[in-house]
Image 1 (cartoon, one colour):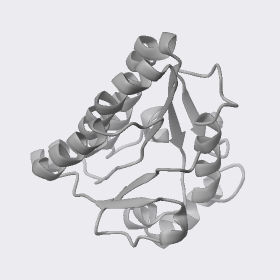
Image 2 (cartoon, rainbow, N blue to C red):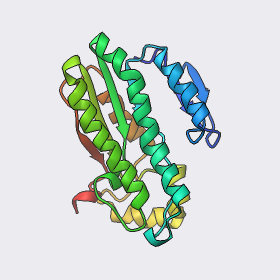
Image 3 (tube, helix red, strand yellow):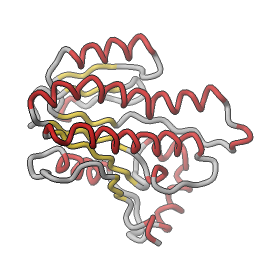
Amino acid sequence: MGEGVIVEYTGRSEVQENHGGSKYIKIDFTNNDEIAQFESYVRQNDYDILINNCGINKISPISKLDRRDFEEIIHVNLTVPSLLISAVSSSMCEKGWGRIVNVGSIWGKISKEHRAAYSASKHGIDGVTAAVAAEVARFGVLVNTVSPGFVRTKLTESVLGKQGMAEMAEAVPIRRLAEPTEIANFVNWLCSDDNSYISGQNLLIDGGFSRV
């Protein structure tokens, strides 16, 4: 593992060359032409692992929900990952081995006010996980959703603000937000040979938040 890694990113984040990716592709997942080109590129190559980690979020009361915002959230968080799963699934099934992890959210297991669009997208991607897992498991391809709780990321800070992040940390039994590496380590395990029987699951990493 670790060879021939493709890392996609947007212009909103800086790329660190020491992250283990052998090729970086900048793509705007709201641009249909760029998506089509990337999907074609993926179909022409042979990948063992797909991690769908793209995502956007905008908080809004349902009465003030902007249609364009709703459609963009569904498109980036649900439609694009589904297209990429379609692009890799055939070759994985032919080889008899593959791992797909969709990064969901705690708001795809439970929800909260003003999260209608985001929750819809994250509940939706777990529905894709369940359906695809049932379809491809017989070929040695395992598909799961990993649903983080509150993680110390730029997206979390942009949505909650620093004060909101501090308040949320107090609501988590572990009394802190997760670090991105804690999520990445679990995803890495799911994508390894050590995971030989977990598929079709929505696995929460939330410091116990959803259980209290």
